[in-house]
Each structure stands twice: as C-alpha cells, then as structure tokens.
Length: 428
Image 1: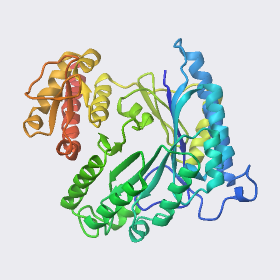
Image 2: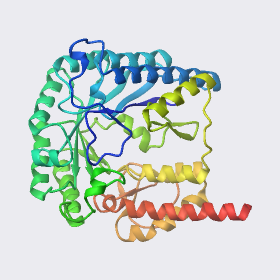
Image 3: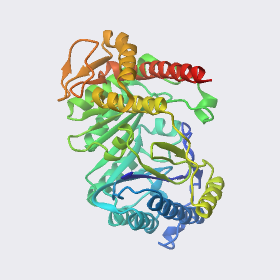
Image 4: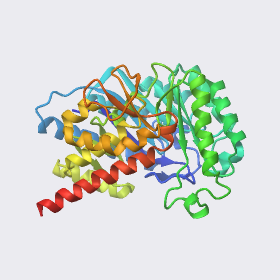
C-alpha cells in the first residue's frame, strides 16, 4: 500500500517560458482571499472541491479492493503549478480529507512548493498551522534579468524576503531550486547564484539543467546550444561548479539534481527514485499503485469530467505494466541516486539473467569510469563484471557518470526495448 501522496495544484499567475506542466493561468490580480480569508479565486475553490472528491473516492476504492493493511501517509507533497496560491483554509481542507481517508503519520514530511512572491507571513503561518513542515522555494536564479528572461514574476529581493519569512514562521527545513542553462546566463551569473544560495543556508538545494520542452515559449524562440542559450560546454561547467561548491559546503549530492545537508534528503522524492508506490491526486497527477501507473487528464475540465465519472463508477481501468517496463523504471529511477541499485534485490525481483544483461550493457561505461560498483556500505569497489549478490551495488559516478546519465539510460532503454520486442515476436 502506498504511504506517499502527491497533490497537484495547477494554478499559476502566468506560465513560465520553459514550462510544459499541466497548469491553469489565473493572472496577476490579487486573490479574493484578501477580502475573505475563506475564499480564493473561484476557479481555485472549485478545483479544491473536485480534488477532495477524488481523494475521497480513491480512498473508498482502495479500502474495498485490497486485503493489505492500510498505512498512514509518511509523506505528502503539494506540487504545481503554484500551491502557494491556495489559501491556508483550502490547504487545510485537502490535508484534512487525506488524514480522514488515509491517515497522516505524526512525523510525516508535508512539503509544499512555493513561489517567493506569492505569500506573506499570515498566509505562511496558516500553512504551518495546517501541517506544512517543509517548503520548496522556486528561486531559479538570483539575477533580475534572468528571472525576467524566463517569465518569472519574482525578484532576487523577493527570494531573500521569502526565506526570512520561513525563518520567522519556524520553517527550518526548506529547499531552494536553481536552473542552469537559462538564456543569457553566464558562468559568472551561475557562480553568483550558488553563492547567494549558500548565504541563505537552505537544508536542501535542487539544481536543474534547462530542457527546452516542445510547445513552450522557449521552444518557439530558441534552439539548444545556440545563443542566447549557453553552450553545452558552459552547462557542463555549471553542473561541475554546482557539484563542487555545494559538496564543499557540506551538502550531500544524493541524486543527480539534488543536494541535502545530512538528514534532510527529500523523503517524498525518494519514494519516486526507489520506485515505491504512491498516490497522485489532481489534474495531470500520476499514481503508482499495485505495480501499475495511471495519469489523470492534463486539462482542467477534462479532469473534472474524469473525477465525476470516477466517483460514479468507483473504478479505474489500470493499464498493465510488463515486467521489463517495471525493470526499466527501476533502473532509470534508481540510478539517479548516488547509492545506485542493489544487484541482489534486482535479481530477486527481475531474474539473474536480466541483471547479467544489464551489467554486460554497462561494461563500456564502467571502463570509462562513468559506472562503478559499491559494497554494502556504499564504499567504492574495483573491477567489472561484478558478482550479483546483496553485497554489491552499481551506481553512476559523480560527477562524470551523472553528467552522461541520459546516454547511459538511453542505452539501457534500447537494450531492454529490443528484448521486449524480441519476446513479443517470439510469442506471435
């Protein structure tokens, strides 16, 4: 049974130029909540009502369709969009229905993504009173011109103000997000942003490399690697600089894009990377339950219609995920972590032959120093191939292996896809 829940809040003041997430733009006008604390934009209030209906229906189905003992949620993550456009009472309503239907553990990590200019002290105090104990703050950059170039609404000063509010309200566990590879971004910009992060002293830092997604404004305006976007050489230097600066400052590089002080890794996101089950609720959200993945509609009205049908039928037509796809998911997620994957566990779940094929495919990358083996204490070992036991792990090296992770994972995808195609052909 899942013990983690992702809640998608799709509303934003405007769409950032790099964003392809399922969102709804509500504009820059101030929310009605300033006039009525129980209100909000009408569309947001309507969404919260539908969202609560989905959660309640899902809980009913889960409790009636399995003999497994329900376990309280250990993590809840409000993502978006901009969850901090919710009023505190609206957030509390969602947490209350989650607690009523699934239970929320007393020590649960309850995270919330926030934009720096979307909350004040009173609103933040309301979030904390409702249960939020971890905040992911979307800083992205510390230069006004870069923030404007990617369509952000906040300023560098707003970031500092937001962090001060977090401290005032007792939120000591907070993350800052940065994006490298932005238009007009230079190495000097990047170095200054990293130093600004260290000055603000978050417990966690996420460093993402810009991807120009199809259908976005950046996709219409820019071609990767062509000015004003930085060159690939420059973005590699940015990644290496982040790794060096943050690890020297005491942050653990525990995942390709994430750094944390000891004891502050994001518990919720580790659920994804460890390929554990989780609930997803809201427009465009994905669930992973009973070994199957399911994604909700990405448009708001289509999502509303789906929830109504879901509530009436009380069933989901779960797609069937073949074992090789489950293996591929496990590899692509687990190799993002610095500790990599346990070979004995892989063999137990997917078979020794599959693991041996994976090791054979990875051998050229091991020779280059991009993939390596660890012992059970996560200490480096030499040699390849390696014995498939619970004593051995494989991981991508940092930073060399992490930098080429897409190449390595694409190769594994091709190997496993070819095997799936061969198996299908043999059966037909």
